[in-house]
Structure formats: C-alpha cells, structure tokens
Length: 567
Ligand code: DGT
Ligand code: CA
Ligand code: CA
Ligand code: ZN
Image 1 (cartoon, rainbow, N blue to C red):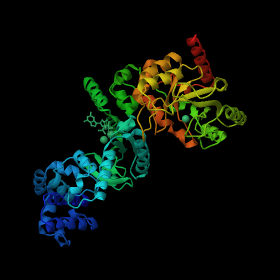
Image 2: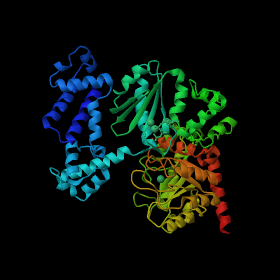
Image 3: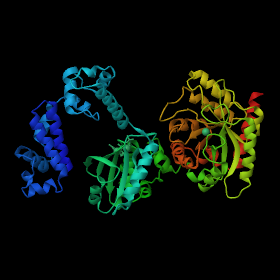
Image 4: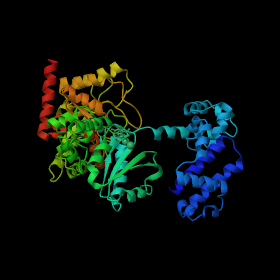
C-alpha cells in the first residue's frame, strides 16, 4: 500500500469527522498526520515493520493504530462506521472543487441541501448567502465549481480523447520495458463521445510497469488500482484506464478492452459454441481462431459484424490512402491564412493529388468574401499555381452562402465558371424547421451546387445542430445527386456516424472534407475518416476518393440531372 493511499484514508476520516461537527483538535490531528505522510521519504509499510511509525512527529497512538489496521487489513472499521453515519448525499456536494466538508455541513444545517442540483439552485437564487461565512464571491466560486464538475464528469467528443491518447501513448512507448502501447475502448471504436479513455500496454513485467503509471506526467491523481487496471485522472478531468498484459496475450486483451460490450458478448458466445478460447498474441489470431476475418474496431458494435466476418462479407471500409483530394479548402483570398501555392504544396506533402479551393463569397459577414470580379482574379492565380511542378492540382471552386430564402449569393454566370461549388448555411441559423429545410432543399436543386457543406451547422464548442430535417435533406441529396459533407474539423464534425450511416443507407454520396484554413488543418482528416468508417462507407461512396476527372464528371452529371429535373 502506498503512502498516498494511507493519506487519502486519513483525509477521509477527517472530512467525515468535520461533517459530524467533531472536536476541532481531533480533526486537526488527522490533517497533521496527512501532512507528515506527504513529506515522508520512506514507505509507511517499512516503518511499521521496524516499529518506527510512532516516532514520526504528529502521529500519536490513536492514529498509529488506525494506520496499522488499514495497512495490514486494507480496511478501517472506524471509517466504515463513520461512512454509514454521515448522510452519503452530503458527500456529493463536497465533490464541488473548493467546497470543503465544513461548508457543506453549514449549508446542510441551514438549508437542508444534500444534492448538487439543489446546491446549484440555491447559489443561483442567492439563498446560499444566508449560510454562515458564505459571501457573494463564495457563491460565485461554488457555481464555477459545479460547472467544472459537470464538464469533467461528462463525456467528451472522441477527437479530444485521441489527442490525449497520442500524448500518453508517446510517453508510455518511451518507458523501459514497454513492448507495445495502444488505444482501446470507445475511443478506438471512434464513438462520437467517450466516457473514459482506455489504453493497453504490453510488457514482460506488468507489475513493474504498473508502478510507473502514477508517475506519468499527464497524471493528476490515481483513482484506483484494481487487478490489472490502473485508473488515473488527468488534469483536464478525463479518466484514463491503463491495463498491462504480457505480450503473448496482447491480442486477446486488445479485443476485450476495445469492446464494445455487445461485440464481446457475441464473440464469447461464438467461442463457447465452437469450444474455443478468446486467445492470441495478435487480434488477427484471435479472430482467425474463431473462423472470422479481422474486424475493424469502428464496426465492433454487435450489429452483425461477427457474422459478416465469418462469411467474409465485411465492407471494405474507406482508408486514408483512398482519399485523393480535399473538396473544401480556403486560402488568403478569403479567410484562410495561406497563399494558394502553400495550400497546394502542403496538400501534396500529405498525399493529396488535388484540392478544390473553395474561398468564401461576398455575403459572408464573418470573413472577407469574394465578389465575382475577385473570383476572376483568383482564377488567374490558380492557373499560375497549376503551371508549377510538385504541387497538388488546384481546382477552381467556391463556398457559396445559402441565403435565408434558399438562393445563392453568386450570379449563375460566376457559378457556371467554377469547377465545383460547395454550399452552406452560415446566417439565419435559427429559422424554424420547415423554413430552414425548404431553404436547403432549394439550394440542393440548383444545378451549380455539388456538395452541401456544414450540413448541421453545429459547433461542438458552441452550438448544437440547427432544426434542419436532415433526413429530408439526405433524400433530396440522393434525388439531385448532390454530395453531403462530413466536415472533419474537430470543432464541427457536422455529420455524426448516425447521420452518415443514414446517408449511406439512403444511397447518398459523401465528402470527407477538412475545410482547411491553413495546412495543419489537413490533419483533421483522421476524424472525418473515422466517422465515415463507423458509418460503413466504402471508397465508392466517398466523392473525394475519385481523381479530378472523376470529380468533374460528377459535377457535370449533377448539373445535367438538375436541368432534367427542372424540365
Ligand atoms: P465509454 O468508456 O463509456 O465511452 O465506453 P467503453 O466501450 O470504452 O467502455 P469501458 O471503458 O467501460 O470499457 C472498455 C471496454 O472493456 C468495453 O468496450 C468492453 C470491455 N468491458 C468493460 N466492462 C465489461 C463488461 O462488464 N462486460 C464485457 N463483456 N466487456 C466489458
Ligand atoms: Ca472507455
Ligand atoms: Ca474504461
Ligand atoms: Zn469552409
């Protein structure tokens, strides 16, 4: 047992005594013992063996006895009794950062408040001010603490989990004795949101590695050490579960720890029917032993993927290498940061053959937008860039605004001069459902609109989806031959995996676009790609897997069909 665990136990005893209004000196004695433990350079367990624990200043006989009981039995009867006596709900409000047990007790005594919701309500209506010692500033801090608690205890969108995983896996892989470290759980499956991050490590000496986890630079606190899993909390509040196994069972552990639970249950049932075990050093071996092809993690949701893997009919999901271009990019002709040539060079460096330059149009109020004249000037620069060797080819496009009445903010003549047009809603986002839906349907019927971008207009950090009837839009996209965009930006991800799957099932074509405003934003591609894979998209269902000629042919076909539909 670590000193920190003993300190946590003593702190909890002190908290509970405080809530009960026990003697001040008694409580202070526990707090003082915690301080002494924090400064200790030796292990408490060793001190107990040598009979030297009571030599430590601040640790009297009563506390010494409790420490010995806790270290030797893993439990403390006194603590168990205290916990049974204190209203457990009171402990709930002490979870608010900055709200100590003494204040919690005062709040309870004055207002009878036990729950976080009641506490928040009392703070908002300033009833907390009637509690002894609580001032306006305290009330403000309590509200902030509640907001933080809600944020850190909620789920996060998978890109944030991936960024944390990148950092932790880099640290883990650099540790001595780590043969392998990989992402698992819902984050590996690219679920839209992630409850906690799961990481799996392989090494010959799991115990030695476990001891290292608490010292990783990302760790704020170790929450639990339970069998093979160490749960830690990082500074952002996210929980990370770390599991270590020996290399020869890595494959089986990776399958199990990746989930989903439904997938695991079905896989186990299959193994039992076949009289086999879920075992293997690699995932491929695990699945092969059960007569299955390896299943991409994005499909492991227990939706029939195991039967498909057994029959050999899993979809051939779109991969990064299939994406040949980006259909939605910006330059410093509108609100992008870089010159066209820089965007084209960076695209080439990332393996794209082409980009469609889709600078904004004039009516966009948040950015410098192009007039028809400036589109003509930009076309000359595009031609010059395309004459240079070694760059991705630049197609001449625009991101047009769908105005509140469904019309587009460029004249037909300019629209007709462009290779590809993406259209999106940027203003009047709060229109009623039928109005905004008709507005978008009208735009999709235009012969010039090739890709409907930002389909739900959501901003993950700011606002939810508009009231748009997405299913009606999907149906119209199929009828008119318009592509729908999965926006790869981790702040947007307009179509989640559920919408993208509905679009695929309806027969729509999708675009996996970065909406890059500077080169580093091309790297957002992994997020949109993961959504597309979860939706079951194969390369033929993604417009930007085509070469430039294929994309231009798609645009011509769209125009011809729209004109036909109008007739
Ligand atoms: P989350 O964290 O809520 O976003 O979702 P997951 O899927 O990451 O769930 P988590 O972190 O509780 O566990 C990671 C994986 O471990 C999970 O996908 C499957 C496996 N697992 C955990 N608990 C159980 C269980 O009780 N039964 C089975 N069959 N598998 C489990
Ligand atoms: Ca998890
Ligand atoms: Ca977990
Ligand atoms: Zn854009």
